[in-house]
Image (tube, rainbow, N blue to C red; front, side, top):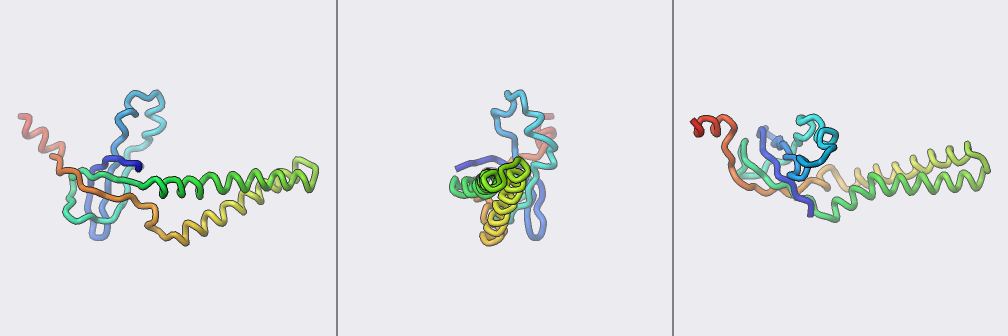
Amino acid sequence: MMERTARVVAIHADHMDVAVHAAAACGACGARKACHGDPAARVFALPIVPGVEAGSEVSLALENHRLILSAVLAYLLPATACVFGAVIGQALGHANLAAFAGAVLGLCAGLLPARLMGTWLGQHWNEPAIHGCSSLPSPEEKRSSAT
């Protein structure tokens, strides 16, 4: 199971916004600026969990089988279809252009079932399980208690 800690930054009528914390090991990595990107990009809209309020920390957990299925649909299926299409195009046309055309057709043929499978599974099939951790003081509360 893959788990990350996040802080609830806002609660709206139909969802809550959570900001995912960077992993502790990320501070030592030389590529940390490339991975972290824009902090606003690490804010996600998730369903509201009862008892959680703005400023609370939550644990987001994604089951292994959902993570693997996501990777298969997004990467393995289209890549395999692309290679298979290139091999068939090369065998049928005996030219690089035929292999290229087969690769493009194979990629499209791999993306279509991945898209249909994602639609069939529904919008919320890969949402993480959300568990409340604690209610942490806001940065303003930390400053006022330090003085």
